[in-house]
Length: 150
Image 1 (cartoon, rainbow, N blue to C red):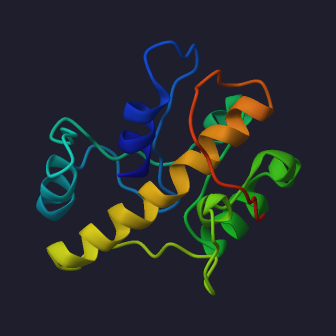
Image 2: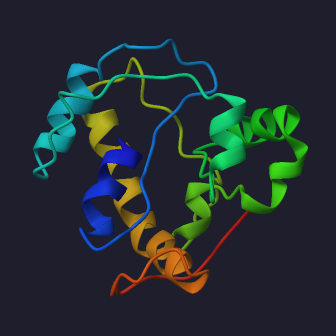
């Protein structure tokens, strides 16, 4: 969901691309019906999404890697410790970070769970876009919040 939402928010002027990959994902699975509905409610079509596992090449070529949980981050850094400087937790971009640094995976949850996840992702995107602009990867004109947790 986060990649699709960022793809929409980044704007057509961007020269970079957004990809989604999972640390435990099986290749080729569609998004859950709940994820499709939760994003359709905000005008994003997720029906074409297919899962893909995270590959070492993807990590090497990525300018930025934004996992949703500390356990995902830790897995990434075990696979490629040299990626440390480009791995940032999504919740680190929230304007008012909460108690948890993790944005839990809604898989298997209800539509309400997916909506909550969607809304939490949305809260993080302005700060992420601001960070991308600050490091020279984006020239978006977003009204963004602060914060970056590793």
